[in-house]
Image (cartoon, rainbow, N blue to C red; front, side, top):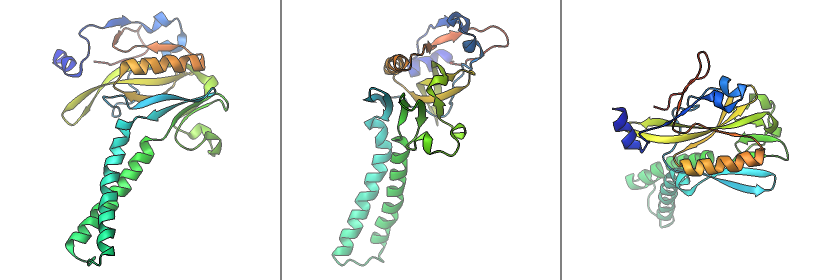
Length: 235
């Protein structure tokens, strides 16, 4: 069954052994190596890394990801346009056809706009203010920065972690890779998850140079740990 799943998702049959102790870093031994997010991901490249300026890098949603919001938004907008065009030409707005257009247009437009707004929120690394965050709201505008779920001071980032995982949607199993931040206290913050390991590794290297932090790459490596240390399940 495991071999079947590997073939289905394109995973290699053999994996190198990985010992967190080989990193020579006590923080690595206290870090969790299991997937940080189990129900989120994509089997394609969902984000691209963009240099806004010399002091700021951002992950931005790719076109394919944006389609998840653009499609329902487009359906809703077209339905509303047809509805209002019929209204301008004097068609009764109480008949079933007009009501169907309105009932389709309003929820699809609202859903598409909400999804698009959510998935296009930037993922920011800013050396000028010294913060990492996800979202449109700058951390300085938050009442309590420490209460933010996806926020960290850049100086407290210890390393970048790359790991692989499978996630399932209904009957389909997908291969995905995670980029996580490891903080000085070994806690992790998930940055993003997508299905292009080469691009994720390239982006991680770029980000590591920008932050002057190491990359801990455990993608498709079988983890071996000492007792009472960390855990990993990339089966």
